[in-house]
Length: 55
Ligand SMILES: [Zn+2]
Image 1 (cartoon, rainbow, N blue to C red):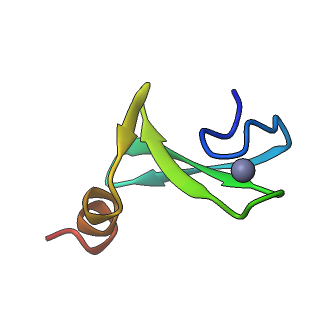
Image 2 (image 1 turned 135 degrees about the vertical axis):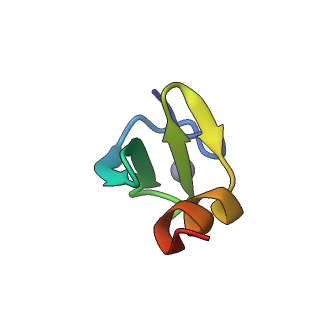
């Protein structure tokens, strides 16, 4: 996978489980872009916060 913004492949991936859903955070070490993904689908930040807070 490459960063959608700067196309580098130097990404940091952190996998967490929120409310029994596996969510992967991708962080670009070059342009500091961040995005979230769950089961192959990209997640908006609002959805992540929703899972994290359980609302
Ligand atoms: Zn980037």
